[in-house]
Image 1: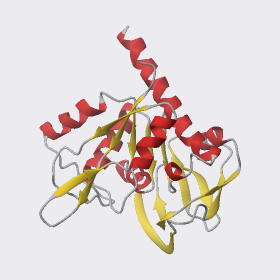
Image 2: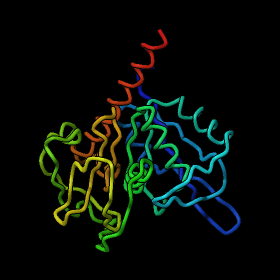
Image 3: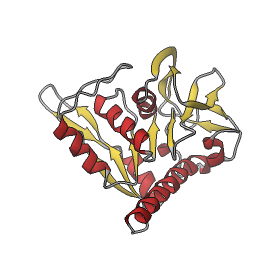
Image 4: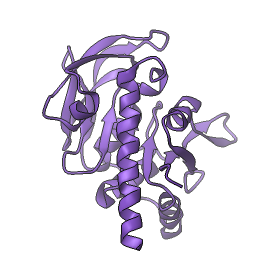
Length: 234
């Protein structure tokens, strides 16, 4: 199989006070299928919901960690989804991917996971820009020295918005900003693909070539990782 396999990390979804379910957003999985990848779900290792803060803790048991390792080993790349919270197991996954140089794409809250996983901090600015119904909300300016610029090949693009604007103290490189100074894209220059976006390209890639390029760039990195593993095995 030449297609890269992408693991989308499922998030706990609290449906009631008595049960927890996990969710993978259809738009995210479809974006991978439509752009040449295969999708599997990375399932939380336990049913407990433990919100991750800036100083998150590795609270997983040895068995829970190995359940995650075995799932990730099936994949050539990982996606961390958006949502209203971050769980500590998501930070554990992101940190492991960072250390192992496994391609990982973080979307919205997933970007914050990438930051927190390696010691960064997240703090609110207070500028609400959660405009889910609008196709485009604002532009972002991209640093020409970034990996993200090499993917997009454009200095400025329009994006959507479903978030409260956040500021960060981050060990990552801020590769794109909005006009009010919010970091919209962050990346690890020394990694194959460790990149997070504040917006939601999965909602725009069918109409917007720039958004499609994000998934193509990610999948190219996944394929490179896959081919590297195959060479090591041979």
